[in-house]
Length: 218
Image (cartoon, rainbow, N blue to C red; front, top):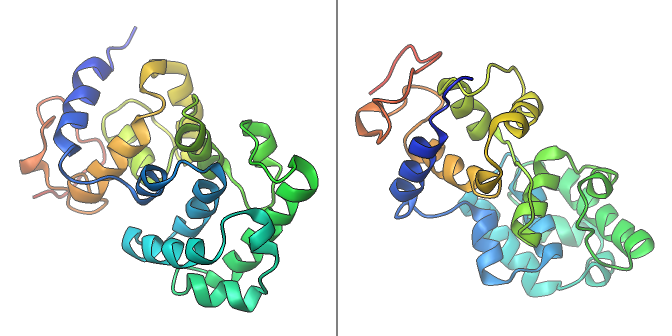
């Protein structure tokens, strides 16, 4: 069986990123572990910088607390509150539809079930898994671009898409790391293991990393 060095790599990275901050959805959870706010915050964060997402979420949550509050707003009002997150017009419509779905199908509560979350329009596997792990402290593997990239660089997987990476990690990653792999690798990817020219000279696991696909580093 292949040695993936999970027991060496993940604790070392977890210690390393401890002082670098946490991803925005984790910060939303730390303020208030409300599954609805975590779901909406995750949608807002897609293709948007953390700082922009955090400010948009703060404005929105000062106005709304529940799905019932959200559906009372017009799309134009939502757009103004969440601007300038990426695709803010589309997201305004999307989060209002999600709020209606939560009211009509789930009694206004976010379901703690991956398959039920995936039934909601605009909720993909990344979002659903992040809600499972952050909102409910349950087992899921949230794979975004950072987790996908770093898992391939380390040779844990050889995949072309984040969804393929999730499925492979579900086979090989010890379950005790499922909840934490996303915040650890996102913070590490944002600060050190960047898409282009990663900072390998500052990497705490450089002796363990095969640097697969890395052609230029600093």
